[in-house]
Length: 491
Ligand SMILES: Nc1ncnc2c1ncn2[C@@H]1O[C@H](COP(=O)(O)OP(=O)(O)O[C@H]2O[C@H](CO)[C@@H](O)[C@H](O)[C@H]2O)[C@@H](O)[C@H]1O
Image (cartoon, rainbow, N blue to C red; front, side, top):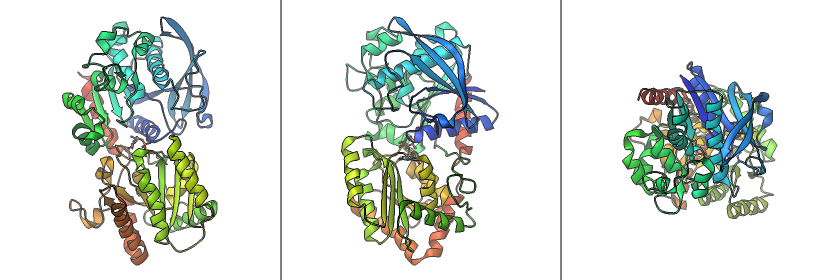
């Protein structure tokens, strides 16, 4: 099968969070299964060019119709660890992808509407006719809309779209300018509630809704979150829409790339190790302490890695730091915040805790350091308010960092409480789960985990190894996606 992924991220060249990991990991899995995969991405000025091999211009004069005129683009091509990627670079006074960041620009909706249009024009003009186009999140929600309303009539009538939602909160809202710019026009038609009209704001177009309504199949990133999105407020207003389209909507648990995340061969960690022999892990803990100037003591090390966002339960992340210290353990945080208030808060905390030899807050994005933290930590906290899938607990498993998570979204599908899970035999349990959002709930789960570390080290090791035993690679999800592609291809 010939599959093209259109996305705003692909790790490690463009990675703001989990979306990048998924786009890369799924593509590699599909290729390993014998399919042809190509990726279309924006050419951001701030992406990691050092992760691209053989970057060259593949297509010099891509003319993209825009607001009744055209914007000329160059399409670059290069390999990101074996994946063939096409990067779209518009030549325009509008800065589009030259703003020093991936997201958070005032014109985000227009930037990604343009990207979606340019990606389709590229397919059309270069005569690429994939069997399946796989799009992700609100940034590419307009791809199926334009494909089935415009490009279908220009020679792309056989293409099918699978659309994956990684986060329902960010839906991409726009006004009629988006319609004039993309050539969709027909305001009345698209603002209609049955098409792109936002479920709450009658004056807004909703990109994600377009993705849901127009795609041949829609997924989110875990079975439990698919249920949450349809039946609870976590769907951020899409409950009814998903209900209407339930026949083409389901949850597929993400995987993680077992080559990128592999303690046996990880080039970012000084000591490799396996689930049968964790001595290398102890040495990595030492290396992590040395690097972050933490003192060397025989105590557990707890970590948090993730975007510092309301979604991640920042109040509980904050509390986890202090509770860890109270329990005489150590804490390492790696995170970055886009919201000024949260950012200021954690910078303040960092200054306050600066001289404490048992805690380190690293504020910023650092892929290399993240590997060492997973490898050095005994426990990883994921106290999310909501979590469509969650990759950090799965990476934690792979590196023997036992997760302590809130029982929401994909965390429910992956973490099984060592003490209380009734659906799994004791030898299949792999972490700690709490449900409420208050401090007491977090503390009780943390205490159970820390007590095990302090009082029953052998049992703790067993728990680490049980987690390492799970297969959360792309093996199973890869198969699931191929089944979906196959189903929609023959419709
Ligand atoms: N400061 C930092 N430095 C280095 N690395 C960092 C980092 N902050 C985060 N990361 C890395 O980024 C990834 C984050 O994964 P998450 O599952 O938390 O995704 P996120 O919430 O961004 O995305 C959404 O999409 C993903 C994928 O579908 C879902 O799993 C998730 O639930 C949903 O919210 C991990 O690989 C982590 O190591």
